[in-house]
Amino acid sequence: MTATLNKVRCAVVGLGRIGSLLENDRLREKPATHAGAIMANEDCELVGGCDIDENRRAAFRERWDCGATYPGVEELIADTRPDVLCVATHPDSHYRMVRAAGIGGVRVAVCEKPLANRLGPAKRIARLHRSGRITVVTNHERRYSSDYLAVRDCIRRETYGRLLSLRGTLCFGQRRHDQVLLHDGTHMVDIINFLVGGHAHLIRRFGRMRSRTSSAYLFGRVKRIPVVIEVGSERDHLVFELELSFERGRVRVGNGVLSFEASGESPFYEGYRSLQHDQAPAIEKTGYFSNMISDAVRCVRDPGHEPISSAIDGLAVMRFIGAVRARR
Image (tube, rainbow, N blue to C red; front, side, top):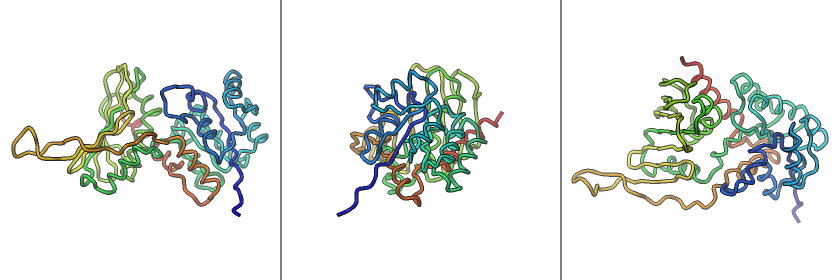
C-alpha cells in the first residue's frame, strides 16, 4: 500500500483582492485567489492568514473558516509553520516578506506580480531563489493557463509556420502608462517571454510613460522576433490581448479572447490568400490559479523542481520595465 502524502501547509500574507476577496467575484473563473486555490487543492491545507487590516482578517476567518490570522508575517510563520507562503501584499513589501519566509523555514514563497516595485529588490528576491534557501514562484498566472499553453503549442508545432511578430495591447482604465506597465503589463511582458522562450529587450519607446492620455508604444525583440506593446489610457474598458502573426496564419489571445485564423484562398480577391477562421481549441476552464498552486506543491515535494514561473522569470520582466523607465 502506498503511503498517503502529508498535506502541504499553506498560508497567505495580504488578504485583499488577489489574496482572498476576488473569490466573491461571481463572473471570474474559480479559484480566483491564493486562498481559493489552496482550498480547492486536495494536497493543500490552509493554516493561516496575515494582514495589518483587522477587517480583512475577520473576512478571511469567516470566508475560509480559518481562525489563525495575524497582523504580522513573522508571527504567522512562527505559529503556523507553513510549507508555502503566498505573498499577496503591495510590491514594495515583497522582498521583506520573502526574506522573512526564508528565515522562518518556509520552503516555497509564491510571490504576486510584479516581483517587486523596483529592480533592486527584485534582484535580491532572485538571489534568495538562486541560493536554494527558498524556492520563489512568481505568480505570472498566464504561464499556467490552458489557452496560453495552447498558443505555445501552436508556436512549437509551427501549426501556421514560423512566428514572425507579436503585438500586444494593454489598456486598464485611466491610470498612468507606467503604473499600467508595472501592475498589469508585467503579465504581458512575461507571457511574451514564455511563449517565445526568451527574454524581451527594449529597443525604443514612443510616448510618455507618466502620461494618462492616448497611448505609449514599446518596441523590442524576443530572440529575433519583433514585439510591439501598446500601453493605453482614456478607455472606459479593459484590454489585455496579444496578436501573433505567422507565415500562414494569425492567433489572438487575451482576456476573453482566443481566435485562430489560417491562410486560405481569398474569397474576396482572385490570385490572393486571406486569413479565415480556423478551429480554436475548446477550453472550458483555463485552470490558471489551480495549476499555479499545483506547481508550488510540486516544488515542496520535489526540491529539485524548478517552477514554471520562477523568481528568475519575474526578474527578467523587471529588467524590461527598468529599461522602459530609464528611457527619456
